[in-house]
Length: 307
Image 1: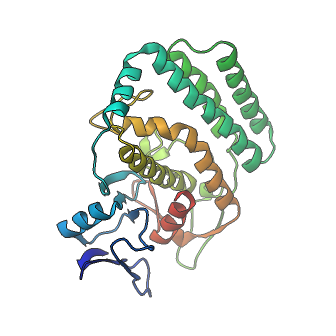
Image 2: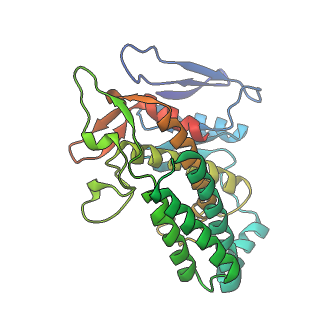
Image 3: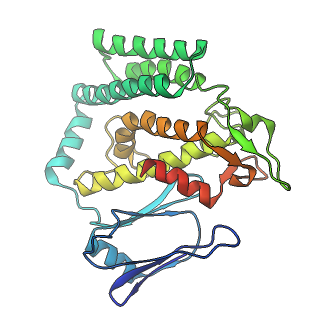
């Protein structure tokens, strides 16, 4: 793929995602009505010039690159990063004050639990596991309201109590994946088992997904992270100053805070897509280390569920 400035316009040329495929080309004019709110590059390779970065900055259009794991690699262009003094001061003061920090974090988790109840009710079929998940979420909400957590350790315990049952209710969710003449899929792909990936060995991590649904979730969360990071920066917040989350190696901890209430909404959009779509074996690639990779076409569809 390539992005370049041509006669004062931005010329975007998509790469090839399959054969035969004629690459698409888009031309954007400065200040034009067709200017996109953001440009998201999904994996791929190609070229970009410093002129393009300057053009994007002038037009306020951020460029976001997400790798095949669904991780945000970079956010460039747009308005750049310039913190608003008042917003940054609010972040620092809230993080430094244990009471305010817990109140802010509790609000995030309350919203997350409420959204989780909606997702479970609307997108997961009735089962004993779903009833347990709904019961746990209701109990967690009641505990937060009746006896608010005194610190983040207690709050995270309440969240973990509900989260374990939440994803357990997904277990057995069927995926329709048709084999092709030359490609077959593992039998375990046909039903969801757990959020953690088997490709990480004994450590229960969500990265390096070994199941297609987890791979799509990682991609969708990556797009969500990019969107919220752009919003945080544009509003003058420092994305690295988290309140609930700790920042490690300049990670966007504040963005992770903002993601918490939005995750179940992304889950709902993806669950509706998965249960209403027949996939092809060609939509996924199984690497030699057991990690599942999405095809470029499917990655674009998943991206569109969040954008």
